[in-house]
Image (cartoon, rainbow, N blue to C red; front, side, top):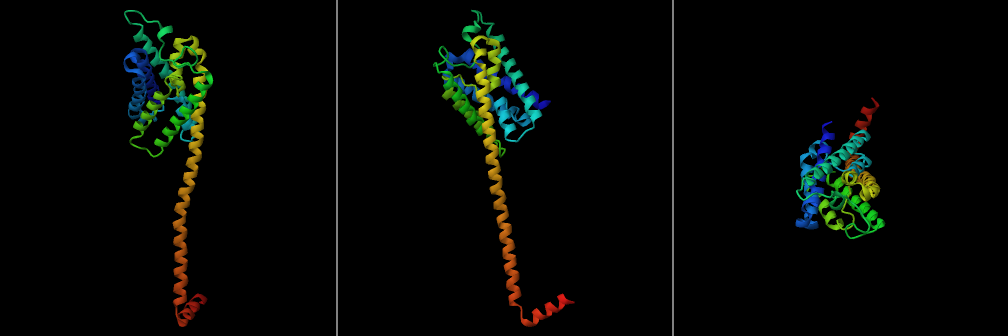
Length: 268
């Protein structure tokens, strides 16, 4: 249960800090500041809850890890449930703070950092551009995570956080960057309207990208394991070959009398 709570908390922090920066600080920090908020929040969670749950804080990552064969279906299911709960609580926490603004807060205008596409959102990219970006970006993101955590790297959290940062720098003007169905779900269910209508894309595209990354990682791991086993078997085979040669040489070097004596012993 502890790891599920860790996933809830990690996803809550990601949404609260990342989407909260969009709501409260976007005019002051710009797109780079927003990108850093998401990346640094994830980096912090990688070290805060990573030792407990692995700090997926993202259903697409969990599905990638599941597909790569690194976790059970039961754990993956509960990870995803708690991630969605954490994201929803994070979005509600932003709303609870924002509505206390003395001049008022119009959620339908300001929003809660929800994702979207089309005219009236960011730079106005169509559904195909949005879907393609989310799919490719999630694939890259999950592939980096799977590779960085493969060997238990101490700097894996830094690598993963920086990857999310550069993905946000690239895609904030396209979709606001999801690469995380839970991150999109939390704000959308509170904002409703168009955000909720477009939510399906941010559920489907990142999910497919994460699953593909897991499949490819599994194939690559199998190939690497085969190569390692081949390398390990080669020296053993060479050693046996050398031993056979030494045995043959020593037998050849024996005198005829020694060979006859050895043959007599075997007969007895």
